[in-house]
Length: 443
Image 1 (cartoon, rainbow, N blue to C red):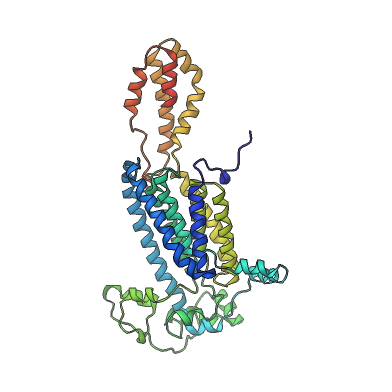
Image 2 (cartoon, rainbow, N blue to C red; image 1 turned 45 degrees about the horizontal axis):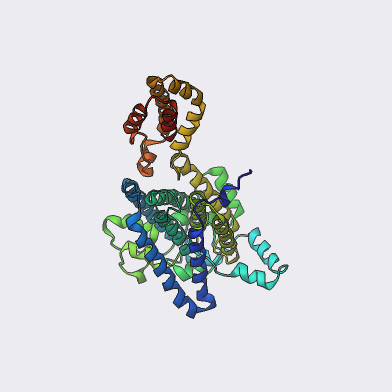
């Protein structure tokens, strides 16, 4: 019988999928019926919390959760460090060019925006309203992943939940670092020209570094040709207002990146990072879409089922909304999707969601089944031990190919757990061949 695709395959029931759909549906009631939303949302969270608390005493995998605690904490620290670097970069890419540049520079031409506008003219208004509806946002995807991780209490996904969370945060940290490096490498004008002046209180003029190396050659084609030929910043940058430099002590090096202004006074540097409700030029690639894709990948790999297909539909809906509402260009969204998929697949090479060692051992046992049967019939316990050792050695070689640094993060269980007890069980299984083979298969 032909098997269903992995994304539609779920052997643990649909309770988690139902909870996810209920969460999204109830939260969307805030736009349809705020009164019902006010009643149902607390009730839903109360039911989910009570169900989780009831399951806690019956959870059988606390030991694996404890082993994953240190990797979880390390991954959290790594993610927070990446988010701090990203937050500094978000303000820097806007502040370095000055508000005048952002007001005068038009958005880039975007084919995705044109296609969506054209689509609006060809489909019913009901479809357009659905595409424009704010069904799901960043906080929804984060909450869906939290629900996925806590579902280990109900055995909906394989334990440990902290291990799943550690992999998610570690992958997210890598994605955030790559994203920050990408958008600070080439600054792209915002698709919303008013964004910078609305969100940031930064100088009107560009940074002195930009005044020397960019402004004189930004629009003059002859100047661009000359700098290509001479490879020297030869133009006179002119005179600009002096930079405001508060006393930030050992963190004063951040002044050139954050560019505070006099109205902000001597506020600490980290206060500047909290004032903006998002960025403007942190475009390639979309951080919101990265979160959405990683959540969908984790859900698909750990849980599967039709709910995974629904979450991917939500991802696509969010993608077109990012473009439609001009939070991002099409390229930002597409790059975020394939980077998120590749990053999750990459970490899966050394950090699998499920323990693959049992499957490898069973495949190896199938290969040596004939030899194992003959040894059992001959009551050759020594041969059985050698065959089982061969299985373990082949598994150990595979495990040793993983990076030791990633081993620290992954918190995977080692191959040595309980091997002596299992071999002892095989040894004392008796002279009959069937018990030996049966014990070996279980091992």
